[in-house]
Length: 504
Image (cartoon, rainbow, N blue to C red):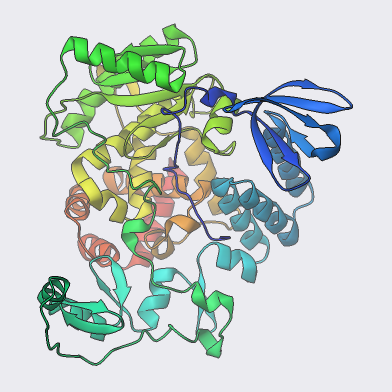
């Protein structure tokens, strides 16, 4: 379970729970059980908590510990400050594993990258970030399987023999490769004599690098890029916005009220393209609603979306960061997310270019990536998806237009510090990164690369648009496509990229 990563697109369970707002405090019992809800009373003899199932009083001698809303945030900040005060590879790795246990996955990724900055050969941190050893060197997942002789087929790593069988229309049943039509006939009760092609086992199926047979070698199973950062709930990127008949005004109002009641929201507010559910100030909701409608119409043009948006897209806004963390199980480093069906954020996120509106612009970019790419969104390289979202998150309103392409100063400062401090991520590494390796620093890198390609190179914007269009259509080799379209050695592109960013 230690490698169970959840991306920038995190699972949310909310609208079906009318009392979801209660799940803020936790009683951990000595027998291993736990109760979630709102603590009403606490004394030397007992603790009373209001849960979804009713009010429960637990004798004090049965209580192992109590965590109240906000405890996790305070504990996180305290542990992070300790790691920063006396930085060491062991300290950052310990902090990263603590983040994992709390479900703070993006924060854990950042902590493991801090570990590698102090000890680049730290084996456990490398493994947690998805690296593999190949001929004595740490490589990415893709490089590992390429080096082992695997090939891609429909988004996953297979052996050449398996690919040949799959392309011949065969399927594997009980370890044997057979014709799909024969399987269907057998399922119907027809006896079939099946040809039996030679079975081919992956080179790493039984033994890992240098003959290891440990638990780690089992982790080297091929990764399907379609699962790279797809939400665990399997959300379709269309979010119900297209392909359905529009609702009448009465139907939409009824749906809005129903969802408000079921989710326990204080406010439900409709704009042209969005339905907002909020536990914060109504005036903020109305202002963001006007701006998001503006964004939507601008993005229709930018992303060349040709479909018809027939239904509103839901945006859920918690009243505070603590409520957001409590209800979504996200850590303090997450400001919001898109999961294919909705955008989720919170009120009160201000300053540093990362206010609530910039979060909505960021997640709105993901919404349109889903609209125009469909399932290919989940197959795209993470640097492209997140880099574009950061590119648009710094957008600004000018009257009835949205001005895009502004420089997010905090992201720029982040990548410049990385250049000066020896943490710069090489281009060949960035364009191959898997989601499990992608931390806060890489958002800045991905943005600056896209900004450079669009604004800092002759013909770069045209080539980038061609790259985007081919990825949108599901190009199977995005790294090879990048090298082909930009048509120069990666080291040369990287040098020009760094010079351009330093001058911004």
